[in-house]
Amino acid sequence: MTTADVAVIGLGAMGSAALYQLARRGMKAIGIDRFDPPHDRGSSHGETRITRQAIGEGAEYVPLVLRSHAIWRELEAQSGECLLHAVGGLILAGERAEGRHHAKPDFLGTTVATARQFGIAHEVLSAEQIAERFPQLILQGDEQGYYEPGAGFVLPEKCIEVQLTLARRMGAGVFTGERVLRLEPTPGGLTVHTSRARYAVGRVVLSAGAWVREFLPLEAFRVHRQVLYWFEPEDPALYAPERFPVFIWLHGPGEDGHFYGFPMLQGSAGVKLAGEQFSRESDPDQVEHTVSSEQIGFIYRHHVAPRLRALGPRCTRTAACLYTSTPDGGFVLDWHPELPGVFVVSPCSGHGFKHSAGLGEAIAQVIAEGRSAVSLEPFSLARFAKR
Image (cartoon, rainbow, N blue to C red; front, top):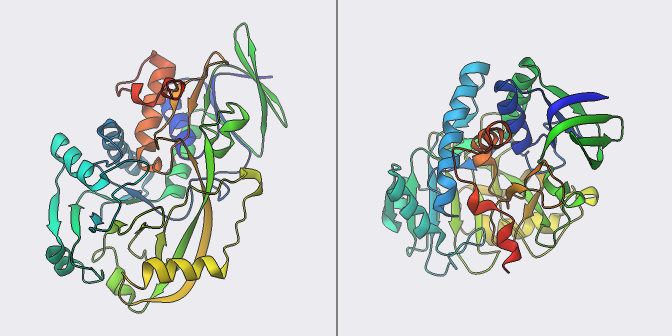
């Protein structure tokens, strides 16, 4: 039976970051994943993920994303890969917009407030200024905007691959194609039983994403299928990274009242766009990865055609991914209430990847040193017991 100081279960955004940070601290660490990461079965795929330093979900997230940006630059230096592209980020909202995003009210206003609180470079723009700077956008004229030059996107598959590669170099064991069946407490720690083997470990980092409910079946944890779309531009240069930022656009009420997007990467299938839905739950083992023509038609008619110039209806690629969410849209970073020595890292409610490198560091600090430099108190399980 293989032994280790700590086992990381699930090697997506959070798990790969935690394994890397544990290994660099000299801990004997192993990582286990039912698939072969980076893969397209969970929440950490699809070419790009938005990163922004001023966080509309709350000030408690800002220290995590600032550490993530610094760590990604360190990872780039070690690997020679480019992971973080600071192309700028725009958040805009019109008068008809509900203003909520990821279960948080006044998302735009909170973003501005956290930028001021942490001294993050930004501009507050009028509709006229947005239209002048980004002629790709079709505005109603009542929009307000927040522009952050240090925002942009990261490449999720590359981030995961780099961290797993570096973790292996530092002695971490990576076991893929193994499903964890159960966690058995023992006098010295835990035994991790998988479909192939058993592992005796002192601690466990449970970063299983949409499968976290197999180990902590809380009703508060909900899994939602999300769809990503790539549309073909008439002029690719118009949406090139040097001319077009990442964006989040709040334009109406309800969950269909916003969408987000990216510039077109070199070699990409098109301009990547997506909305979000939280009304229909999914079983992570039975997710439909095919996207219907009706879904493509809806996002084009409802979001794209009225708001983005020179972006045609031809959808060149689609992908489905999973959000594992909580009622308040917040993370869970806490010790398992029934399994001693198991630290739960999920759900991330659809906005976790930008924080993942910093979270990996914080998790490793908790496991190795007993506490993290960044406060994790806002992400405790206790908040659900109060409801």
